[in-house]
Length: 134
Image (cartoon, rainbow, N blue to C red; front, top):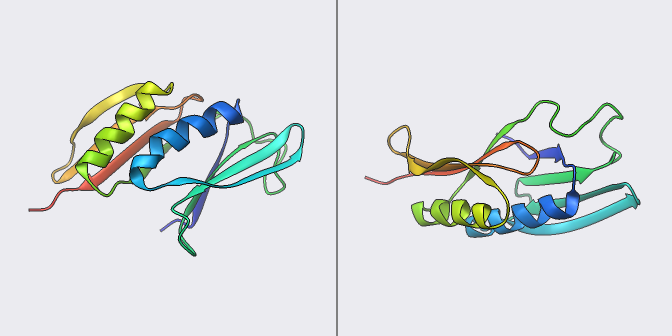
């Protein structure tokens, strides 16, 4: 449904590092890094496949956001699609190891959906999940 989603972070380096580790088990990695000025930068994470959805983490004011954009003024809930139950488990473990807080251990929530939840460095609820086969 979405082509891309972007968030503003307090500390771009720390957030980019956290998301790179959390999303690696899902096949998602940093594919672009941009800096417009000392206080305006962003990174793009994706599978790297042509025309694939992407996720943007920014600090400052990238050209496509307004001056009213602030960090976690309204924390969001993101769910990344995982290829497997094991990838969900690795997402959760990597997030905890790199600074995220637990917001729900991996498990079945709405059968057959298996997912785990973390709180990122800016208070956003980040989930990874997959549908289990029969």
